[in-house]
Amino acid sequence: MPKGYWIVHLKVTDPDTYRRYADVAPAIVTQLGGTYTVDAGRSEIAEGDASLDRHVVVEFPSFEAARSAFHSDAYQSVVHHRHESADCFFTFAEGA
Image 1 (cartoon, rainbow, N blue to C red):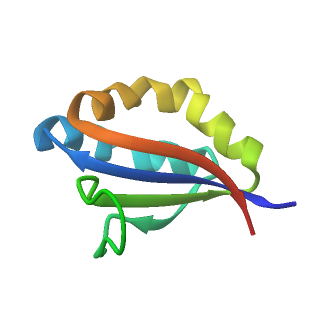
Image 2 (tube, rainbow, N blue to C red):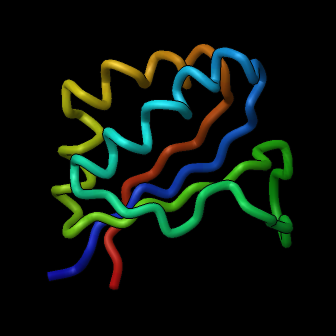
């Protein structure tokens, strides 16, 4: 079965509020079956919009697991902090 992924590109606009999200979201995502494979380390924009300068990839056992984790009550309880503090492009993808 193909795995599912969250592919997220963002720009933090309010670091203090974003910290409220970043301090708790990884533990929630891990409990929901996600594994961070890329988490905002060094990056270089090769093409396209460079305004979204932070990148995160989270792997899940399946596409449906990725979608379910995002829509879970646990994740939705903290996502408002990201909405308040970052511009974001958030994608679900199926892959190897």
